[in-house]
Length: 455
Ligand SMILES: Cc1cc2nc3c(=O)[nH]c(=O)nc-3n(C[C@H](O)[C@H](O)[C@H](O)COP(=O)(O)OP(=O)(O)OC[C@H]3O[C@@H](n4cnc5c(N)ncnc54)[C@H](O)[C@@H]3O)c2cc1C
Image (tube, rainbow, N blue to C red; front, side, top):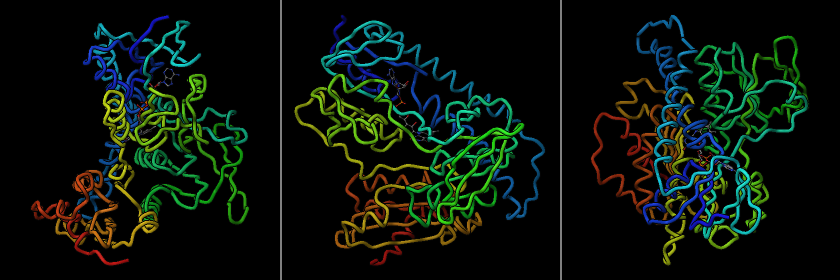
């Protein structure tokens, strides 16, 4: 059996740990079953955002009429839009894999591994043991137990990227961020898209008023059925038929479309790894339990990224990898702090959010809330952005920023200055000390804080 200083499972954020360990001269094994580079590069953030960039441009052209520009899209080349994404991801993956293969001091085990005993894994019939183990094994789509689902060739975030031909119509089961992003993409491509969501709103983890505006805006292009649970799916001629029930009235409805995309959430890969065989505990959802130092229940085993199910975004995974690495080598441990962890939803309109929602903040703080619309700024007015807005949540006593939420154009970029201010203590000084260009959209952030009122 080969012995290592450390084993890293997963080539997503796990690669950061591999690089750190190799630079310390440690003997490292990387285990990954592929696709190399993990979810973000191959199946998640990057390919989806490449597609959505095109969808955004289409939406912009379609909406130019309000600015007095009458334009027409003559054709959309779905095949080349998909192929641009696949080519870019192929090239990035090949380059990353080559770089890793050239690391002479790294042993790369390409295959699915699982634990067989404490600190010991089996991969491709070989046994390896690590003094320390970093589990960065990610997540995979959660497939709901809907009767008949297996009888159709349903899509998930992995297979949707392989489409060669544009579906004329699509039912998306789920209303979280992956669902609304793909709804935006396929609607822009010209497909008739129907969202079937069992909860009472889409983008459920956002502020309720942000979900409400998103739903209102998306309804201009997408059919949305909330509070509606998909119960049975079947194939009828060339269509997939979804029978769903309204959760309030019990009334049944039938939806049909050429394809069905399942996007109801993510599940842990800890089961594939059989983490219990090395004494690592999982929570009730199957994600690996970690403490604030990202240590698992077993000494010298850490879990980072989607594997621990905390906040499943790549930028969070990368920070977790850095924190876990540091905690594994230093006596002075650092806590993983999620209080200024931002995220974005690339729907149309876009959403970005950092920190607490109003309801969550209220549980522990006496708060002030500020709101401003894009149209309250000169640039927003120039853009004729009538609906988009931002909302700030601040601790009324200390003035510390607790949360910030935006819906509208460039929201993921606008949130950054608030994230930076929150990451450096959350003082409003962080926002006001720098001049804001006039006229430019960051004035929305300033305006939102100017409107703070005890709430
Ligand atoms: C459609 C979609 C869009 C997304 N968009 C965004 C976005 O815009 N921004 C953002 O920040 N995040 C986004 N995410 C989330 C983001 O992709 C993940 O949070 C991130 O990739 C997780 O990284 P990770 O390193 O934890 O795991 P991964 O990148 O998933 O890496 C885990 C690796 O471990 C391997 N593995 C698992 N089990 C085993 C085993 N038993 N043996 C061997 N290898 C194994 C897997 O094959 C995989 O390569 C998106 C996700 C999806 C699905």
